[in-house]
Length: 152
Image (tube, rainbow, N blue to C red):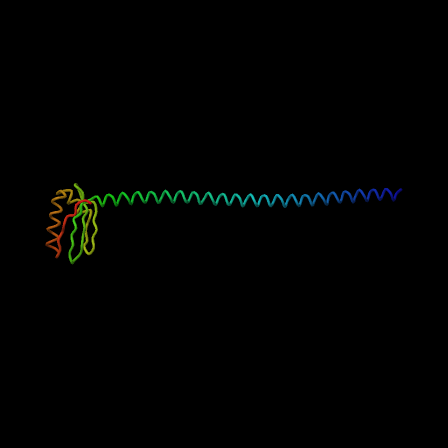
């Protein structure tokens, strides 16, 4: 009977050990599944974050390009809508852009031009008088001449 009792105890111990072993295996499997799920979730989160960042960069970049385009259009339109005094000579060339009130810009090669100072003079004496005086000065100081090109 003792033998039987020992056999029963051994069977119970084996059964308990088997259950513990199975429980540990299940825990390991569950842990592995949880780790895989966490890793997949992290990868998905990174992918979503990356997509969102690229979308934001695209939107900000598009807005920047649109603003630059609008400003460029305004500047080109403003300058091309101006009258021009075109002066050419061997010493250099200058084109003065103006409207009814003042000088709005210039381009020059080989000649220096103080836009701010000349703008003040043009505002003081009037644009027509300024253009006449500049034309006379250019003809006296260089070998060239000036001509007025009206708005396009």
